[in-house]
Length: 325
Image: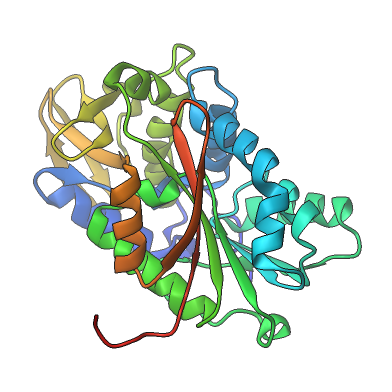
């Protein structure tokens, strides 16, 4: 069943998990709201705008790598696999992959239903002979994929370094969930951002045009719209910082003054200078990435990077478990 659009102040249609995550996140110290809730329709549009910014290198770098390696990937994965894309968004990189691997079907999975349907229609027009099965779901948990691809070998596709948005423990859980969803023998093509100088990283998440700031603040707009919130959005500012100890960019919403507001009937106070932690973007070295994949049940087969080593793509396989060593 497709989710209806949510009118302002109509909490009866709000995602109950969104409500629970926001309320618990505002109550905890330090305050934090999971990054997956960025992606309502407006948030998805803003993120697509971010990917075109001059400071945001990951998208254009990964796209260039995909163009370069596509033929090699096709040879490694073979023909006839069902391509399952996790968190498909607008699927801008997907045509590159679909154009060279001769898939039997394409299953884009995304939490934003309206955005998912729009991008699926566009992709169906581009590949009229391909079976496209949009699937609205939270891919963080194991899921039963459409029956139409039950017997097909599968290739998971997780571009964009989204794995970096999770803590290492959550990333391992996600990789295990993907393995369960795709099944033994499946392959996974996944993007991971590399560790590099702090200046380049911070600029990528705090652009001069302020688009990333709007993306971050849109989370509060969504809280107001869907959870009957009275959050004074103008009282917060976007902050991006590099945490070297944890090898990650952190995004926060910082209160510029003392404020009081309500969300879903609950009252909250926040002091000037206090932040709501909204996103992490972990960066991985070559060895780190391979360890992460193995911890998640995936055996690395091949990796590729750009000439400057800014970004990497990995192909891994869900091989049968074997006893140590």
